[in-house]
Image 1: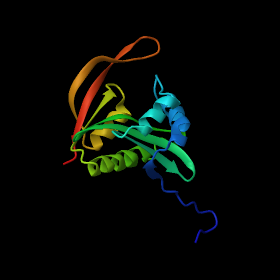
Image 2: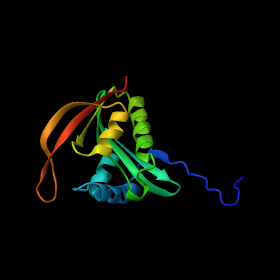
Image 3: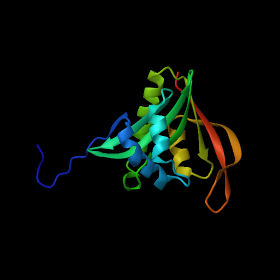
Image 4: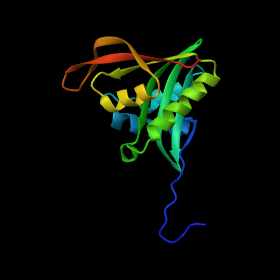
Length: 159
């Protein structure tokens, strides 16, 4: 029963992305990163057997996604993003942990990722999820103005 004036918080759902999601995922990616992936790139990744593409749905809206590529018992998180209007609500944490669970279910034992060195919100998310820094890549990212940024390589064991 819902009382007058009360608000129930909807629970987001993590599920496999479909080709119909490609345009929305590309829009979220483009708004989140300097070089956004296009709809065609998402369509290809969704179709690949070694790539896990999951969407985060809140009611009927896709508000985020996670993409990982799997090779043997290792995976690399290629991208994770939440729509700007839904950030700061712990959705990225829930998405990340659920995504890691799916990877473990597919036999993945180690997960890697790169994160821009100065991206403190993303680094906190990954560190709280158990990732540790294992390396650094100089000038790995390039901003639109040409500025080069370093990336940290992070790893988490799932076993």
